Amino acid sequence: MKGKPRVLGIVLAGGEGKRLWPLTADRAKPAVPFAGNYRLVDFVLSNLVNAGFHQLCVLTQYKSHSLDRHISTTWRLSNVLGQYVTPVPAQQRLGPRWYTGSADAIYQSLNLVYDEQPDYIAVFGADHVYRMDPGQMLEQHIDSGAGVTVAGIRVPRVEARAFGCIDSDPTGRITRFLEKPDNPPSVPDDPDVTFASMGNYLFSTDTLVEALRADAADRDSMHDMGGDIIPTQVDLGNAHVYDFADNIVPGETERDRGYWRDVGTLDAYYDAHMDLVSVHPVFNLYNQKWPIRTATPPLAPAKFVNSGTATESIVGPGSIISGATVTDSVISADVVIEDGAIVEGSVLLPGARVGKGAVVRRAILDKNVVVSDGVRLGVELEADREQYTVSAGGVVVLGKGTRAE
Image: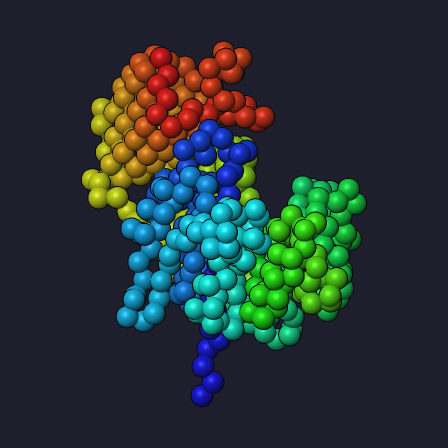
């Protein structure tokens, strides 16, 4: 009986995430907390593990301590069965230099490929919020005979200028790969829609190794997967697109089917949280047939006292809402909101404290932020800009450990 193909997953998690500052001032972007219980990296790891990909290497570099710790303490698979999720920091195996791009990160880590000897390599990004079964993408990749398959999501053509765009023929072969083009190409079956790259790739191992070696020798290359490796494979006629719309995840609903969001900016990060809190959310965290996995902190259940209320909101374990009103918000673990406080349309990360009578509107409070009694955030944006970060969309953001007085 023919065995299953051997797949090595490589998760690119070294991104600095400058557009998410101050949330990335003290941590790598994939380590940023999300949705009350999780970190961003949990979404890609859950998708890969749920699909049966159980040999996963997470390449890290920038301020990686909290990310390394999260992976090491949370993502423990069965060593007896040869399963692992392991962080791999930059090791300077090829000389005294750090990674110069995503392709260079894999090239410097090719020992992982030589050790595992996989048939295929899944190269996925670590900072998107979505559900996907990569096993279905692998099946198409094998059937097509392509060297690399690029996951593409359909977006309105008028919005596609912000993405890497894929032009393909009716067979799925990619004919052009364009970075943020002024005139995005359309998909073969709809002139108003464009395939945007999701940053997820499936390679046949020989194809990836040969491409990385050639790229490393090219002094003009930026050594980037999307900017250099994929366009080269397109020129060779070796790349196909996988339509994310064809991916069927167990337990999905019509409302959340095909959800994918790049949370690379503060406003996108905020909007993704707001997608979670409605009665019928655009992205459903409660799908137990394809769970988003993480480690739950050993905290008591959330508590509501002194007529404290939370509506259209998520409230994490260990949090206490005492005589306060919370609406349309995501409250993470170990958050305390005191008497008379009002929290509206906000995201509070673990350990945040909101004092008596305080008002927090359209704000993101990072870990261990303290809002003192009576302080008003998100009410007078001009005053907030003098002390804190305010996003282009008007979201007030307080960095880790800030005290608002």
